[in-house]
Length: 279
Image 1 (cartoon, helix red, strand yellow):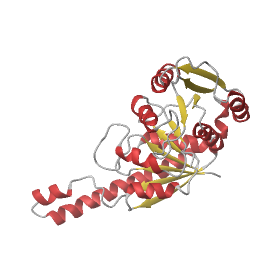
Image 2 (image 1 turned 60 degrees about the vertical axis):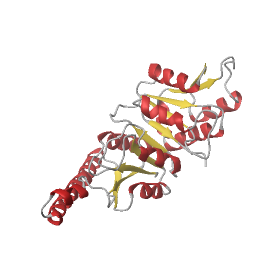
Image 3 (image 1 turned 45 degrees about the horizontal axis):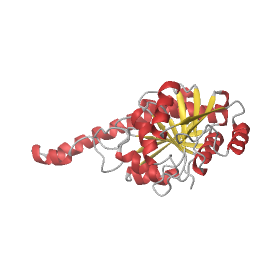
């Protein structure tokens, strides 16, 4: 049984993270860990402001901390009740350590991490991709399913392929993680330079490989700028799709699956994105 981790903020519990996590856990027949990152420096209120404005700051802070704890406890209860109704295997991890470092550490011991593209683990909102997500994706130790704000059922799989080992690795890890997703339509999408022809890079080997994992997969080759072509393709053909992409690591940049590609997908599209690093 695989182990999936859902990164959850007890102050701002993401409904889409919870729903996606439960659905993919069912598909993979996995065990879901609700990882509640109760970072000790993260509060819903401004401590400095309390000291400046309150006549009894220590008392006020104690009351606010108790309120914060109740809110986090309620989020854990909601997760437990929801997973119970979904009839999946689950458990809860809670930690008061620094959220980013603890999440990276827990990812070492997981088969998949599910996290919202909007997570900050602060009381501030940021545009996607957030600083937290950029830092996390640069050094995470397992495949990641980055989910949008709103849940939609997955009806198609899009495998982004550029001929690099990283893009092949992502396809392999997606298949290993979600073998039961194979009943959905699958399309391999590739972008080549203008006048670069319409042949798939390493076409014979790639088709042979994909056929073993997704026998009914189709292949499409476009020409032009990768970012532009991928965005246009997904906007026109990617409704209710899950997108599979390769390397995000700062130290490893393939021809066009560089960090800005995943950033662009998170910024421009409301689709779940499966990201796997070729270590």
